[in-house]
Image 1 (cartoon, rainbow, N blue to C red):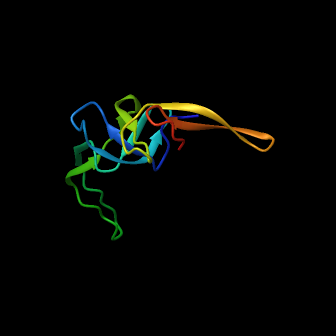
Image 2: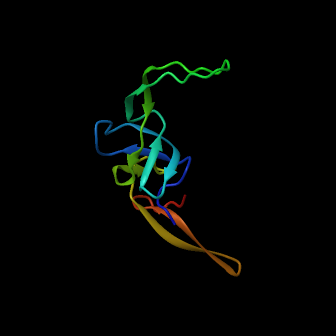
Image 3: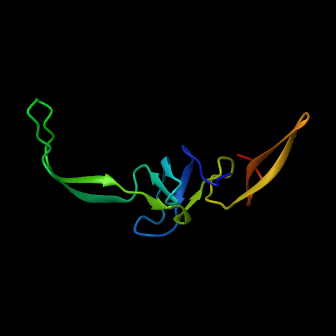
Length: 110
């Protein structure tokens, strides 16, 4: 089980965007990176994509979001609203037992 999932609200704790927060758009599990909405903008030089049909794409300098390493973000707890470390607790649901994430500060599950 991962401590950060897609659509989680996270806060960036290291790097040029430290202190910003945003929603996780995509997780790259093979590289341990996450794409956070509205953070880590980089400039990219794009070549003109031409074609014989009308689908030509313009080139130029484009600003786009880049992935951030997963160790540089902390999930924001929905109940206390602070960036927190994640713990795990087991909840019993009848005859089943499920592992859920919990906030280390206020012990709320999310």
